[in-house]
Image: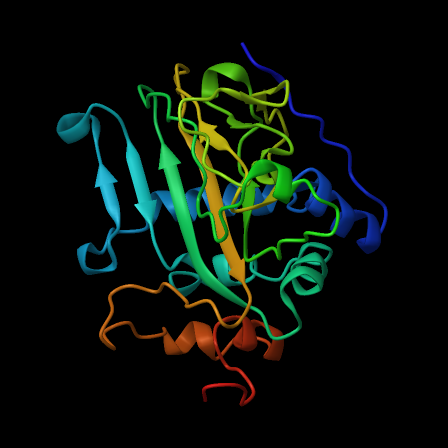
Length: 266
């Protein structure tokens, strides 16, 4: 059993940005209330999968365990759109990625009993560097992509928490066969339903096995600098925004979805 990941909320934007640079993640408690959590879970249960959008809808009959991974969640229900700019979280995102940043993806992910351990991995390594160079205080690698995990369960060991290796984004590489970095071992995220953990793409992490008798619900929102492409399948101009949802979007939400001011390469 892994030890718990330290989850200390920071009081201001400056300290949150510093934590992203130092630790690779920031914790936000109680962003969603119990009613919002229940509504999101119920909506996730009702979402049909769309094959052309690369959705996955594995069931115990065809894969051994429930694994429903629905892309473009913001485009499926207004509840998900309202999660892309939660107060506190969005200010950190804009401080990291710039005031013209955007959402590059969003997934509603349900995993059931029997889900096995993932291997330790990163989501993306934009710049590979020798460790001594990455450790040089003069070298500051920009934060290219961040992911916000909206936890919709009270997390405990048997439910399959996300494990992080704190500070591992400073390794400048993928984990390979390593299970720890500079003495830092995997730590588990034991948080409450409605909490958010946002982390940068280079952090070593993995999902762990669900040995409980309940489903784990997770909403993911991926953010990046405007210059990094949005991943809204299906491609070749086949993706279409739901006009009813788009009509309810605020100006900030529209910008996060791609309604940008003219800039380089436009």
